[in-house]
Image (tube, rainbow, N blue to C red; front, side):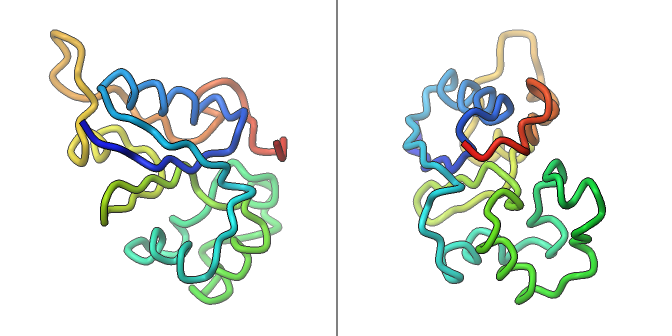
Length: 144
């Protein structure tokens, strides 16, 4: 199977479910703390570049939920600087295998990328496990 570097927010229930799906499919994971990783503009932008700027952000982050930060109003340079300064705002997980990177965890996209080992009788991957709120309550605020 595939070796995946998985950048997560420790303690996030959504990330735990995402890791479990990948492991159950036989993938090996190198788990890294997204909040404490030493991101540079170049290393973080390598993940984000293919996406529209507003898709770079964790919609469960308090500053976004409250409206203090409106991702749709930011240009790429301002958004990247903000994400580097406040990693809690980064949409997660960030995943990397070989030269391929992915932001977020849309199960259909992940399944097409590395395979998720569908249970018998299931013809498509389960719903998205994007973000913490979908899993075990909102864990966006705890800095871990």
